[in-house]
Image: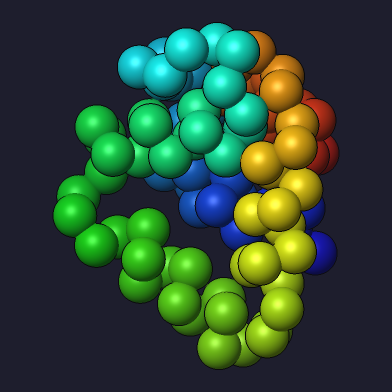
Length: 84
């Protein structure tokens, strides 16, 4: 299973080599959300997250909480921290 729905979607969209506009001290959730806000088309993350939430209830919330507590310093390090 994907360690974090948000990061999994980001990885598929090419986030691994991305620079997030967020402060590197932000949580992985903040870093990835910041990157998504500047790089992805409006609504794309919401559509993906909604699909995952419908297919596996509870997964998104649990993994978002995990990402909010991890501070890895970069989007790439966050992906590595969650096995992506």
